[in-house]
Amino acid sequence: MHAANPLKRWLVRAVLLASALAASAQQDRFRLLKLEDTSGDQHALAERMLKETRVGLGGPWNVMLRSPEMSQGLLSLYNYFRWKTALPRPLMELAILTTAREWSVQFEWFAHYPIALQAGLSPAILADLRVGRRPGNMKPAEAVTHDFTVELCRKHVVSDATFQKARTLLGEKNVVDLTSLVGTYISIGALLNVAEVKTAIKDGPDYLPALQP
Image (tube, rainbow, N blue to C red):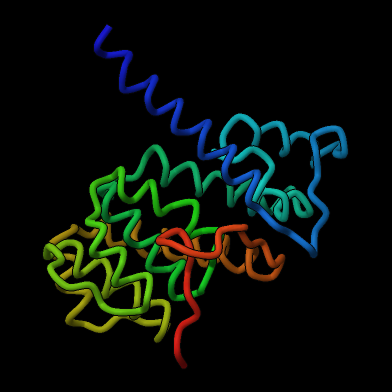
């Protein structure tokens, strides 16, 4: 009985998140598709998305339906990071939110902010990150994950010092996974930004303020 409770709570949170995302998503450039609007490869991808994603056909998945063959691979990468990577969940969510902040991807931040809190990231870290500050009081693994992600997003390379810290604290496999995770969420973020997928949220920690140049 006790073992079922965490699963039940997770399912409730997943349903609430999906409902919130579907209700809040605003998308002007790509018409929101329903399953009945699709056919062929697009229909097969839509059915897969409905089974494997948190938000069904909303958010980036609606955009990706326009290119089913490409999107099958991107969805597989997304699922790898959800279920198979050894990268610790708090570090993964920190990297995703850091990438979302660097690219100013509102929808991505809105979707992952509550997941990051659930994974154990400090609200104070996320509050600093949200306004473009390097968070204080990070654990060593959090600090190197943040710095690695910022360098990769801004400079498109990672310094020797940051790489060595990451390899020491995370291990080589997780360095490769972290690099690919950032690349994956840059791809998803780029799709969201090009499609102008936003949320109705306009205030609070779920909303990204504009950064000063």
